[in-house]
Length: 270
Length: 270
Figure 1 (cartoon, rainbow over the protein chains, first blue to last red):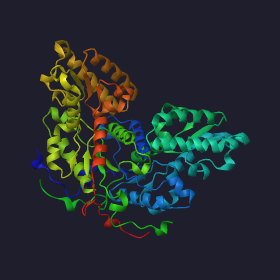
Figure 2 (cartoon, chains in turn red, cyan):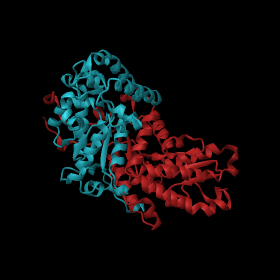
Figure 3 (cartoon, each protein chain N blue to C red):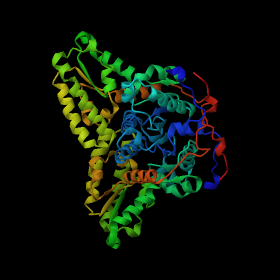
Figure 4 (tube, rainbow over the protein chains, first blue to last red):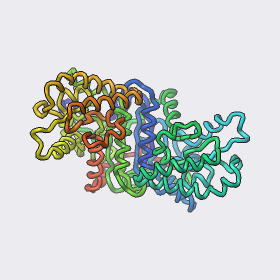
């Protein structure tokens, strides 16, 4: 059979069908990327392999630490994230998903720079939180657990929204320190420790009786297990996957002339 | 910040570092792809995000069903798999991994067609099984659970290796039917059913007292949970992840001139 196979000049339509695939900027972190792809597959609710959402995931994890960069006022990660997003655009992707909460502190800049849609995990999660508050908006109590940058920059919870009281604010540094430790453990593969400490952290957060606890770092989503299904937990990775599925169902993201990857340099008959 | 950012003419070195990333042909199926990437991240045992293995995963799942194609003597999936592998080669990948057992029935053709290494999941799993037999090789009893094609074509277990007796052979059709049902449930998102039935299937297989049970379909690996850690279970997805990590550690897969993706068509200043 191999003698019948040619390296095609353009893989576009034959390779990916008539729809532009989803582009995923991975590696922030690698386990969180895998978790996002798992949730995407699980939630798609299609019948066969062939019906699943096509995607290209570029996981080039040599991106400077987002939280650390923000703490020193550096935009270095943004340059790296954009380079990856451009690459996915060029490869023919019709929208970009970034399963990293902290990276969304640059969501505005990323959207301005891209010519395809960024499916903005933080924006849609905020909307989902607003929707869930309903008529209780003025009394809504939420706790965000994530990196120092996402917690201190109010990625999900802005100070005036927080009605958790003085005792909570006294405990905030400790909660933050514990979240950071868990995130580091996930990134370095200490999953058992991370899971045990995460259960304790959620327990501690629940002692302040919040309406919602937001997993503001995808590393926490990666190891939350069944806890993520609890009604008081908001998992942005779940919300992002739903939005990607909605994008796929809604769109007619067809390949244009420039969408296909130019493989002419590799064209040869076998 | 966006005004400082340019779409680079070549993302090669800046984007992926000086090492060629791993290429992953995904979508066979989508949940199995996510599981492989999860295992890869978990097993990497690195300290930070930045140390994880870079990869490009192309999941264009519109590949004809592998098992069905083999049953009618069709090579149609091979053409599709090769197209994806070529795409990954062109994108600059230094080796290709395919987290699908049945696809490896074409491993010889894929290797002949590629100019980079296929990290052959079936070959390395067979080697791992041979190594585990030790001095008991002549009495070694193994059961392979997977698609009809992988079970009937002896992807892992060749008939003369099988010492499980007449009763086992009488039950084989039933085991095969149950495995196929579970695999279909995983592909269509019925994970709870699939997990319950998988536990029962492993229990049934164990009643024949095999030395090893081989998860010969990556959909089974995707839902095996803690069972996959049992000493009598051989999970090729685990073995593939280990081999990819070994490849990464061993290699100096630097980008050549042709390795980078040519993004010139998209070059513009923002």
